[in-house]
Length: 318
Image: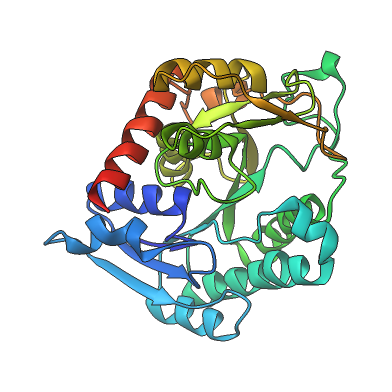
């Protein structure tokens, strides 16, 4: 199979690229390196026998359509995105350029290439909006009421996918991801609390918890998520799947687990709660289990240990 991965130099995308190459597939990576890094693909690019081609290109460019059409992938995994909710609020037009126009370009390229399918990375933390505690863990039937331009764009792309399936016969599967964490996640950004905590704990710096720390998230390990993408390449046509654990973990619980694993004894610093932040979040993986045969298998304890080990090793070798 020939696959094309947009955002393939990113945290999740590069891990997916590794999985596809390990399975013997040919892979094209499209990434503008605005948030991704070639370092994430260094191991994959250095190995002999892998059919991997990297293309530095912005999905907003019309050239993206031509490239995808020329490379003729059978399956397109579309992960490229402007993924910062706060950026989408401050710069909604920019968010729409990347997440809507960019996605339409990917769809047009896939159509022109005669691709069989697109697997799209959506956001389970934003498309449903602020759900009540009684609704958790959320199922795919829950109403979608996004409260940010980023969430609106992800919801709109799903509608475009449905149209392209109906009009052009281009199959799709949508994966609504929970809070993905794991090796290669950026510890210097504002998103990805596990990576941020890991970086600061290893530097023996205080971690900051916003609000009282009781807010919950559904943390799912990147290898588990990539397994869902790989399965979605051949299954789940025309459907949306939540990719999470269904388990709520509070930020206080997360910090306690990570601090214990890192051998840190100092408490976290506190700061005022961030405006607009969801209080609780969890996604039911039940539909994915039925249609994709997918279940998360990495425990928080094991996942956190892997993250800390990777960050420590990465720092030691740099």
